[in-house]
Image (cartoon, rainbow, N blue to C red; front, side, top):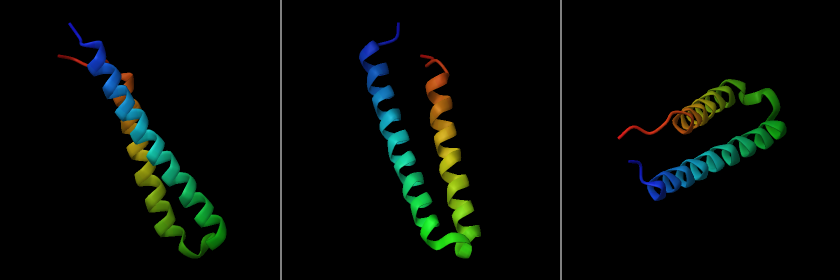
Length: 67
């Protein structure tokens, strides 16, 4: 049987991770607006990496925990 407290703690950690990643994306977007297209390749690489991390985190939440 799954321990509800453990699942809640895991959810809390995942939400915290997602919040940090989204904050990072917001900061990158605001920085990009200032810099414009001067550093496009660097910016695109960072965004792709952050989106990948968020996608993985969301997938973890979507799949049930198996024990």
